[in-house]
Image 1: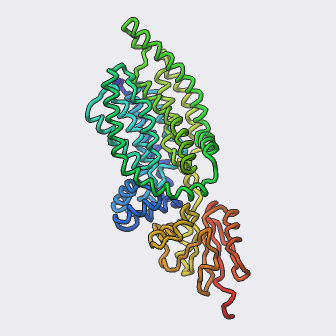
Image 2: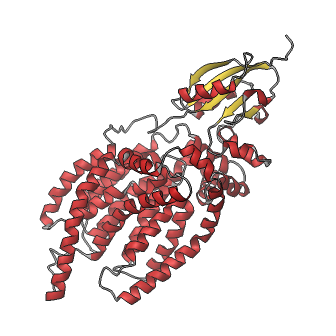
Image 3: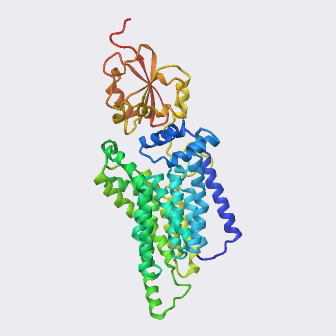
Length: 513
């Protein structure tokens, strides 16, 4: 690894950047949870023995939830407590990326540009404040790739073991992280630095087989998800081609342009790398100023490969099972443009032009990170906030009315027909975790296949009807439930754009006046 010194100005820069990144991610941690985070809250709300089955019902491995369960028993079961681990991971990502990119490329300006983008990227800010594993996956992916490329220069047993172990942990945190390992197989199996090919490939084959073996328990857990693929397919409602295009356009609008520009730079870097290797073979020497080290090139190429491999994987799995992969399942790709940019900038020759190139790319990085929208250090609502269960629960707790809940969960129709109580608890999870209502006996679940008249509710004060979805979608749902004139639903208010509250009189046609 290069031993470039870091000036006090650079240390001050990364310290201020880390503080700013941590603050931006912190100020909205106490905002309302949304439906996926409410699944986390319900999963960890009770004993440790309940975590495994509750995580599995939600199509997740329990590793992240075990960590969250431990966390809330230390600092409390509230919004901040549930989100503290992702916040730590999202904040640590900024200085970690600076240190790892500088260590790998030897370029402080390039590392500074990448850290700038990672600190203010809107999507990274969002996931760092979400009680789900995505921010942890992003940080661990960075560490894992750093360890893997370190083998090119320092193939020590400690680094090798750490690299092998972090791979399966990524898969346990989220199953789609297997794409990271697939990309590594394609890139790191080749001895880029001129080491003896047989020994290098033999060692990497053993390493990848070890990772695959450790991933077997996670793969076994995917079988129930595959058996329920029809639920996902009906819920997704789009083909993988459009979903992949939506990912590139919506998630990486400015960054995708940056990738296209830097893709050309990478092509030039490949040509220069090959030419330098050829010169080295002919003259047995390469200028230190002009040479591009193999580990720098492989580091950049590997991150670039994640995007291509992920889209190909999405296409394959959509054709095989269902188009179930949403944008958030590719969240480990969010740091890719900034890391690729730093790698390409470090390969700019002559090196004296690097600071100028970094200054230009830094402007593009800020544009890509903000997605064209201003980022405030004092914002009160979370980015993409669409559900306010926090305020809704306060309304429900202040009354003793019956609550009819339609949570819009993917597995609603399937789980509603299961006899086990745990599946019915899952359908009630928005009001059974952090925002649980005082009397669960007053809670009734509506599913898309059930009509209001089937609930057999007694006459009494008007009941609350909670519908998760847009106002338009909720209105259509209410029309399907309103089977006769005795079922008069009245709209009360919206709790942000994706959560609606109605009330309905508990009267039946055969009730006595």
